[in-house]
Each structure stands twice: as C-alpha cells, then as structure tokens.
Length: 324
Image (cartoon, rainbow, N blue to C red):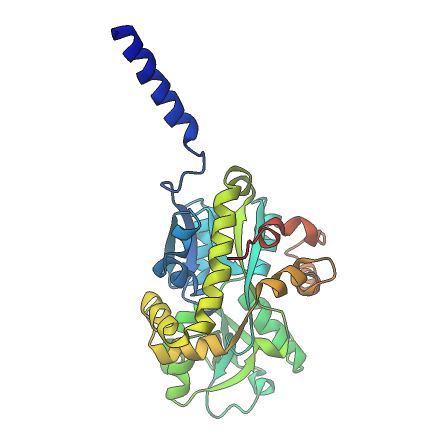
C-alpha cells in the first residue's frame, strides 16, 4: 500500500509538471511604454482584463520620455516596448534583434513642432533654436524633415537635444524658439499662446507607432505575444466603442487630463486589424514608411546599408487573431 501511494503521488507530480506551459502567465511580459496617447489603450487592455482574458500577464513599465524607455529596452530591463518604427530600424542596426508585431497608430497632429506666437511658419525658424528628443531618433528625423520640406536645411537652425516633456518649460524660460512635442505638452503650450508650426501628418507615415519584441522573446513566448496582440486589437475597439470611459482610464494611467488625452487620441489614427494586416504586406504602408526612414538614416550616416524591411516585421500575430 505504501509503495502504491508513492507511485500515485509521483504520477500526480509528473502530470502537473507536464501540464504547465513554458509560457506561464505567472511570468509577466515586461513592456516599456512612455506617455503617448497613440498606444495608451494598452492600459485599457490591462484595466479591462483583456490580457488576462488571453492568458498572458503583462507588466507595463511607464517612463515619461521615449528616449529613456528605449534605453531600458536596450539594456534588457523590458522585453518589448511600444515605440516608433524608426527606433526598431536603429535597434537592429545596433545588433539588437527586434521585430514589430503590431502597429498601434500613425501620428498626424499627435506629434507637433510648437513655437513662439510671433513665428508664422516653419520657414521662420531659419537661424532660430529648435529642440528634438535624442540624436539619431525619430524626433530628430521629424524636425529635420519638416524643416527641409519648408526650405530650412540642416545647419540653418540651432538644434537642442531636449525631452518632449520639457519643451514648454524651455520655451517659457526663453531657452529656445520651438520644439518637437506631443500631449499633454501640446495642449499646455497652446493654452499659453504658443502655436503649432508643423505636424507629423505633413509627412504621412513618418511616425508609425508599433509594438515590438526581442527576437528571442518571440521565439520563446509566441503564445504570450499572440495574447498581447489580440488584447491590443480588442482594446483599440473598446476605445472607440466606449470613448468617455476609455479616455478617463488612459488619462489617469498616463498622468493627463481627460481633455489632453482626448486631443492626443484625435491626433492619431489607430489602425484596425485589417489595416495592420494590409500595412505589413510587401508594398504596404509600413514598407513605404520604411523606405523613407531608411533613406533618411542612410543620408545621415546612421545606417551603412538599407535594411530588408521584411526582416523587421513579424506578421504571424496579426494574422493569427481569432474572432470572438
């Protein structure tokens, strides 16, 4: 009898061990996220139990500034991040294998250059001081590209490296004339009389925001990543089905007023699942944006060769979405 009990006990232990998934939801996926309305619906997925619904635990690690968030990803503090397509390209060029799995939004008036009231247009920034967040970043690319479009070439203005969250503070202190920023700073700057001189939408697709993971995480935890992507698709739909409640949840999570979050959400286009699938196909919007970004970085010496955009994208997760 004693021997029989040992055999049964051992069998139960083995059965339990075998039933555990190597992608156990008790081990959270750590995702870096910064203050940005375009992917703030990640907090809806968290608040409404959508990650849990799809059997994945997620830890959202918030930082105010995107440059700091990307550094945390580089050092391995987080396994994935919500960021900009151009960041994914640069990370891969640095040898950090990273793949985009989902497109959250395109920025229009979400990213802007705000400037002093006496400035009528971007052309007036010739010889003036303007900020962007981080050398070699999407922020620098946006500022240089928008100014070049209006005839103000690189070298024709003074550049300042400054987080987007500090732009209004620097303008108020008289340290510069304009800067690249987004909500909540945009609304705060407009309330003080500053004005928008240029926006991301003037160069459609230049700022495409995505969810990305390290290659090895994708290989090790595909089921968890599938759950995250499915939860984000459902959170995007929840945002538009329940706008007021959603805005309040997102604003609270990111330290904004509801009005600031609403303005930020209006300034982006949140892609549907079908738009995601179309954009990720060869010749789609992601490839068109990638060509522009790669060309910019090649001309600026930040890339030595044009990357194969196919190698930066992992389409299986948007293609694997299941309908309720």
